[in-house]
Image (tube, rainbow, N blue to C red):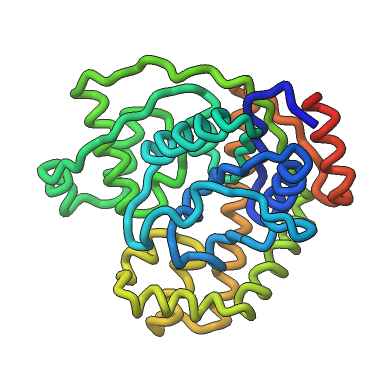
Length: 305
């Protein structure tokens, strides 16, 4: 079976089962999956980022995947690098006459390739960063909001992200940049979602399972390998709260409760981003997550003919 679309995109909040759906569709289409997740690029960050690599094997058939485990933990991968890497992989898959399937929950990363806006590499500005010393987060947020509407709220949840966001906006303000649009991709977008209660229950169950599977040991191993606590906290969610627990700053129960709530809030922000995409004219064909996997696959296959 073939598709009339150059790219099939499958999105959804965390714990929505989007990877499982993408893998089943890829098996039938003999396609390959491009991850659109901002944290799964890091090696050694497996349980905490929800790589679920077992999902890429169906009936003993291994589904090829890309942009997972491509940089070392501790580095700062960004949306510019993702866009560049995506098109490199996308062009290769198309050249081999396979079906690319983009799958992920990082709205900014997804939009960076489906909206065809060209990103640039913004260098560090040490002088500008030195000027941030002594400034409160509120002062920096006010400065960032003077450049643009803050659609991407993740820019304001971490000091390093906040400073980097201002650095990028300053660069765009003071430099000529190449705004030539990227090639247009004939793309169809599916979204997987659950009711709020079901989503919350899935998040809690998955968190308990990943802790049983050794997620704390994973974070300890990263710390022992030389990744700094500050870098792990920068990655947020699982890595932030588990690192704080390992450092003795919070108890196990506090870690679980705070992390469970933070993941649920993150899923809510993901859905807010997707709804904004729809308001801006991007068509997302939503599929109810509680449907059997075969039924979800059939919905996708019927719409891509």
